[in-house]
Length: 399
Image (cartoon, rainbow, N blue to C red; front, side):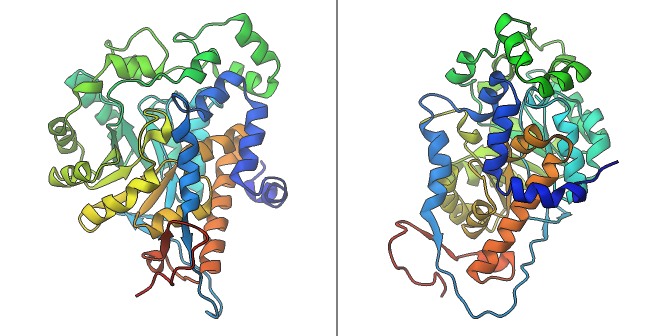
């Protein structure tokens, strides 16, 4: 049986960046899958700005530091990880590549980083838990029924998931116009358009035929679930706008491990999360998939760090595509970073060991850029980021 180590050298030459994996994935999967994965909502201004905003975060490097081998191992929420980043939750993951959740969970376990399974993934906690070991985080879209909610939490805990992530930034489904134009139906059905896409993407089709059409296997277990495969329909039919701070607190009381609230951009919301006892927050604009008029996550981060940075753990999400982006978020005060699209691109492009390759790209980029900057540890990154015009000549950023 082959291993990633046997492929690493050749893949690093052919696919040295996440952007290379994105190009490969786009060619390998049907248009409907690519549209779901890669697009945002509205005019998609925020989708572009999420990545562009990182370019405004720069550094002034220091030299003559001798030999540097940066230490990037991280402890957060009582767990040790090999790097300060992990895999973000993505709904309907199996649409991008069959068995994607298991492949990413296995990669996370091998690489020593967390994998976050969505309630709206295409595999169940029981299935994925067998692959992720003790590195599983579980992301909750709360059902309207308290009984169903409690059962989902129990299933995740019994399957070995350690950290709970409550997503709160979907008061209603977004419109996602490009996804509709691409033909993502609200029900899984075979159409002439879908057949053509399947025939022209044989690798995806063969893998899908072997595993079956993607379904929301966790969500569909509950009577309130609509006869509808779409993520949006489930969210709209469940708690959605009824999500409250009191409810988040109630959920946290049911979960024995760490609990995070995902989707915060406003400092006052971050303070409120701390006040109800959350172990962490995830600064995120849902990958620009919900509200095209929102602030970018990286622009929101400094104010949130100033408001609650020493009172809770801050995880960063949205727009991250490189190890340099990871470094930028950490330098602005994040304790940890999650990436969704980057790892999905990798599996869609390369299959079984795609997640391993994405990890090594990001790890190598992060360590290389830390050496370029002249820092030996993650702690030394704090305060080194500069915000504003790249053409200015600021000071070192150090006191």
